[in-house]
Structure formats: C-alpha cells, structure tokens
Length: 405
Image (cartoon, rainbow, N blue to C red; front, side):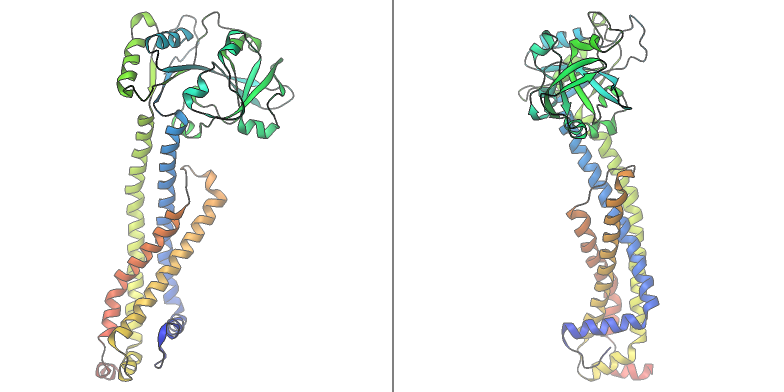
C-alpha cells in the first residue's frame, strides 16, 4: 500500500498494486468464486426457463381448457376410442362450453423429402385453443359441412415455404387454398406430452375434418375416430366441476369411449413446478457449496494479505490513518474481487447459453435475474467473508507492527 494515498482513486491503486504482488493467490480466489457464481447463474437460468415453460403451457393449451386424449393403443376395428359423436354428446350436454376434435396425420409433400403434420379438425379449434390469427381466417362450419378444400397453415410453415393467404398447395394429390395463417404454438405442451396427438409441431396445416378421404388411401367410415377433444369452459362455470361432469359422462358404458386421459393446465404445470422445486433444492445446494468455498478462499486471501501488510498498516496508522480507513481498503478489495468474479461468470454463462442453449435438456431463460442476482450475491458474500480480515487489519497498531518486525 502507498502510505500517502487518500481517496477512492488512491485506494483502488493500492488494491491493484497489492493484487498484482500476489497474483497467484488472487487468481486462485478469483477462479474459485467464478465457479460458484457460474453455478448460481446457470441455476437461475434453468429455474427461469422452467417458470417460463409453466406459463407457456397454460397459454398454449388455453385458459380454462381441458384436453381429452384417447389412449387406444391399436387400430383394431371396433376397439373403443374417441369418436366425433363423443364431441357431439359433450356439446349437447354442455351448450355453453366450446368443443373441438382433432385427428393428426403425417402427409408427405409432393416433390419434397419431408412431410407435413395435417390436423383434421372443425371450425372451433382456434377459438378453443385461443390462438392468434396472423392473416386471413380460420376454418368455419361451412368449410366442414361443404367439404371445402381450404387449409390454414402455421406461421413458421408460412415463413419457411413462403406460403401466403390465397395460395394453392397440394396435399397428397389434392389441391387446397390457404384461407389463413395462424400462430399455433405447442412447444410447451410437446415438452410435457409424449402422445403424438398433442404434438402439432411447427410445420402444421389445419383442414376440415370431413376431407380426410381426399388424401388418405383408407377412410374410417361415417364415424371416424379422433385423437383428442378439447373442451373450453367459460369463466362463469366452475372449471373443476365441469370437467368432472364431462369425465362422468364419457365414462358411461354406452359411450364406449375406452380409456381416456384428461389433461388439465394445472396438472401439466404441477409437473413442471415439481421439477423446478427439485432442481432448486439440488442445484441450489451445489451453488451454495460452491459459493461458500469461494467465500472461504476469499477470506483466506484476505487473511494472508493482512499478515503480509502488517508493517505497512502500522506505518499508515503512524501517519494518521484511522482504523476505518484500513478496514475500508481490505473491505473494498474483497468486494472488487467478488464483483469481478460475478461479472466474469455471468458473461461466460450468458455466452455459453446463447451459443448452445438450444441443445440443453432444460429450458433456459436469460434476463435481469440472471444478471443482477449474482452481482447482489457477490456484494453480500464479499461483505460477509471480508468483515473478519478487515476488522483484524483495523485493530493493528503501530506498536504491534514494530513487534511484528
């Protein structure tokens, strides 16, 4: 330390010179804290991603929307399963609710190596799922009744193949006119559901449910099965009671609906929240241990610095430096070391997530939390582990420095 130094600028120069003289020791403490802050930043990104997925699930499934999924495992004739008549029965018994049925097909594209996901449905699906139209319109009842060859495409598909409203597309030899473009997200649901009926994907086309025979070699007769039925309950109704009434209705023997899975937003979110809670405990424990290790390393660095500077501290005290001036130097040194480690760890983690975050098994979300929380933690951590060494340095008197010599 420079004995005549005063002010913040001089203190920073003293700290810089001190750190340079003990570069190896400082680097060890710095990298130990980088590991801790990197683990904390990664944990915050994972927890933020899971929370974002939890909210996206409700948004994608729809508010007050339940999904009824057929669990039929084989396509044997006569096997119980969901049919269009089940949607009709539900609609008659719950006239104030909206219902929509879907059936999923993979249709190869003429002249292309890939295939499209084609969803045969009715005119209520967009309203039930509360999707946003980008352009044009969605299917309507006249499209279904008159078997019109119209299609609605997803926004990613429209952008990839430059399809626009009014264009003519071909689905397995049948020509369809694009009636609209829709924002039909299902990423959050796909992450939670394994059944293909829910996994629309990005490249998806919606067509009237009455047009299946136009591109399928075999049609299923006048009552074709459906993969799923969506039920939208109005806010004026009790959602739980309405879903339970629908469950009892379809479980009656004469319905012959087979084994069904009822998918509710709260149930899907509960799975994500449980995973989030588990990661928070396990990942939080690891991060806490890493941070404590980094803090202990910082405290060891500060204690060693105090021992090395006893003579300099005594000289400063003899020239009029107050105990708090001595303590502030060591306290500021700890804060700067921890803060620099938090910044370095944050930049490293953010860069790695931006470059390879898409390939991770968990959703990741960067934001103010991942940037600010590690910095705040660094301030608190440095204050806690620098207090002891700074206080010890402030208690050194000139006479003690002479005895040390």
